[in-house]
Length: 417
Figure (cartoon, rainbow, N blue to C red):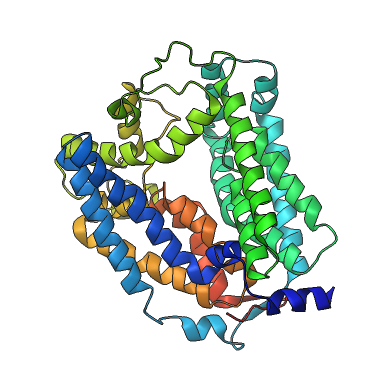
């Protein structure tokens, strides 16, 4: 087994291993941002819809990506991340065991108190609208003490549990496959279509780091992810479908919430390629129309609004209302992290958020903690469609950054970049 691992280290890395390595993280994420939020909006402006908001989005993205590259060059925490001194050493079994005891307790309580299980309803042929309501009520619709489950879920499934599973794989734990299967079953239980990627992406990155992700394995991994997304989308569409969609599709219609995909594949493509763009432009329109384009100074964050004494502004729900014509207490329209900086702090926010995220990608590259390093594609995936403040405070990444700086998993081989 050790000879196999050594041979994997010695051979030339595959394309998939190079793309998924933490050293490539900043470059890959920058390309994705520029493509989706700069190049495409510019093309839309020039060819389809000559509206200034597309130029504004492209400029915000270009400035933010430049700031990320500057942040990625600053060696602010390199010594701390690679140092063998001043670390809190924790046996990996203790960390993984405690994480899964807490996660199991959370799952049991959540299922015991849920009004329905969305995956069961989906197989029973429940209509798409009712199924969507069930998905929202499973966690987002909780009230009172039950609301704590929503925050515990975000913290556990976005960082702690994926990190613990990667650590189990790095230590070659006998239960590593069972832990991965357990997370997968939970992720599909309430029909959040992309939740399984919270573990799939770090595991793919882990195998890339360990040089165990050749071309064939990478294709199989990506294929399985696409099939799972398509299957979840098919179930999420429910028994109603989207009959009546015309054969001719106008580009301007695709770039709006009014577009109705006719099948799961079209839904996936629309959701991945069009929704991020028009949600970003809609956010800028709502910010200008509802709030006079003035900085909101952190009021979009529950934590910062409470800390600073501001009234909480749920911008994501204002955007949803703008897109779909009605307020919904469990529905949000999130957009990428640079717009979070822009609407809260103006152009200074774009620059500061870009600098910070560039530095975080540098941490992923220089750290020797394989579990932390493997989280980079998940961090990028969430940033692509979510605000930075919420990601740090609500999804556990602020903890993971502190973890990377102060804790060492005893018994797990460390990676040397």
